[in-house]
Length: 256
Image (cartoon, rainbow, N blue to C red; front, side, top):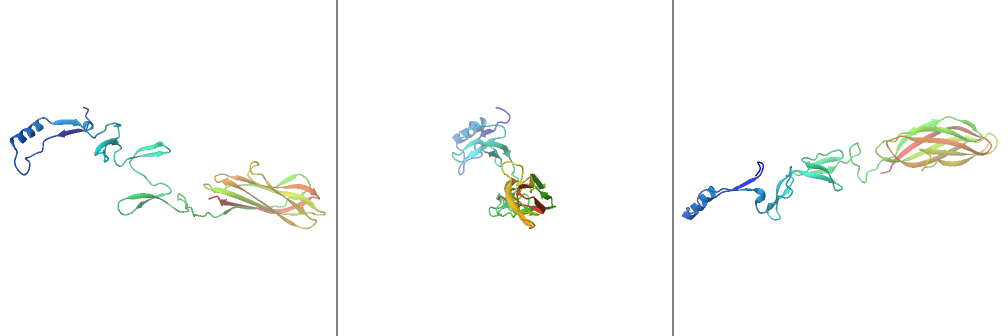
């Protein structure tokens, strides 16, 4: 028997039964019980299963058979995720970001989502995020284009972090032809070349008549970094095209 064993000592009842008084035989039985105290470990009693007894655990009442089993002390718990124990012997649960503690007035508390649109809150299923204009810029005239390609505008845009976006970029540029007709391609790209190619449209320019050309493109993007926006013109056929001033607009639409 070790010092931290739980000991159960059984003794005779104190005093005579009521009503009446001790008989000679009852006195002898009581005296014998007191003289021979019955000391046992708790785990030696019927209905007590000591299997699994270890540091940090104790005996817990088993209502199924009015016995005792081994478990964590009341008030403690074990947190598991996907079958793997993350935290053991939890003595308190704190409501962190996105959660609040509710009290129904009866002394019972619960955890509930902290709905809202600010940081550290949870958006409801019917919550709507509005689109946002991230960037608007103008670029100057670049002059006559008679062959090859020319970059009209290039910049990096940084969407807000924490939300998946659909990025939308538009370019508007005025083009004209000084003498006869000509054609050129106006293109815009979001990000580097690869899975989302450049959006390229062909336009006709007529001698002396301004033509407002416009192209737009879109792609999904995860906020948290910058993304390049590139606009270029590619000469196609006919007489040279005179490329005048233009502008670029970048918008973002939440994907949830």
